[in-house]
Image: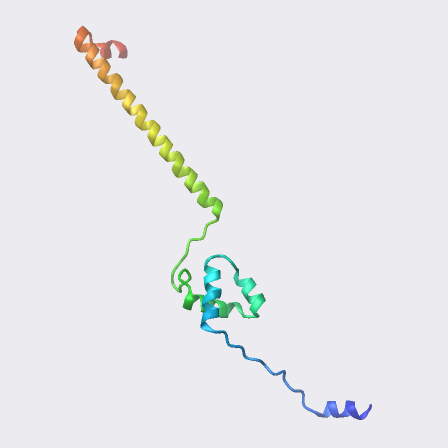
Length: 129
């Protein structure tokens, strides 16, 4: 063994120096705004800024309008929302059709009533037999 190897064995192992990074409030707010608008994901922020998911969650709870502790959010896919809109439109169409049919029924009943009165015949009674 050479001198260099003996010296390195005798010296205590040094821990790597940990660097502390501080992120400004403006940067945190910008990242959380982007997160709220679905422009970035938490995973992308973790990767790009080398930050833990826990830190991002803390920022989100502090700065986000949408993500607050104790508030439950219902998350649904865009296709579910689209299906709901289509179903609402279909309900409107069907309500319109039912309304038209009801008007037709009332018109026909009135016509029968007037015909019965003018002719003196009980049409409803004869029709049901």
